[in-house]
Amino acid sequence: MLGIDLKEIVGAFVVLFAILDIIGSIPVIIDIKNKTGPIQSKKISLISWFLLVLFYFMGDGVLALFGVDIQSFAVAGSIVILAIGFEMIFDIHIFKYDDSPEGVSSIVPLVFPLIVGAGSFTTLLSLKAEYATINIMIALALNVLFIYMVLKQINWLERKLGKGLIYIFRKFFGIILLAVAVKLFAANAGHLFV
Image (spheres, one colour):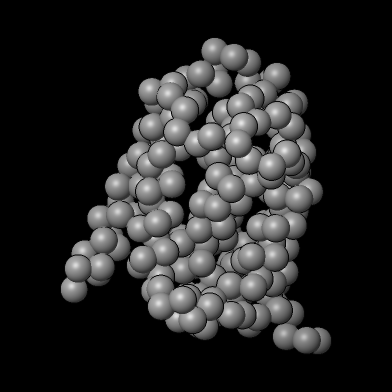
């Protein structure tokens, strides 16, 4: 019925879970929460889901409308990820959270590029060629539900991990973010100069 295939859902879920990597983003989320205040888990999850679904159906057209390709988008995302990594490693402030309207300061670094970014967009487009749309949408909804649960329980996770472990994770994941940013930039920047 409707082409729903459990094997395809599981396959798409695993791929999206690895790319969206909300577990690996926990130290970043805690860091942003400590700078901006409470994380709006429902709003962040819904905006992420909406943007991912929108991009799945209209991504190529939207990027073409602005004369932007996926490589340029990836380079832009890599620069934001690089800035977040610098903040985490060097304990500096690049993003000015206090200048943004109340309630949206955590949305920009969390929704884009951490959850919704070039990697998730590219993955969705490649899944399109492999799986039925209904199965991808179910897998995406399950991933966003998991993201919501992690964001909702971020205070509990912070208490369970403790300040010392969070500090170590923060530095470690800051380096990981820098490495991801460099890889994203290196893989896509050459395209800009062709």
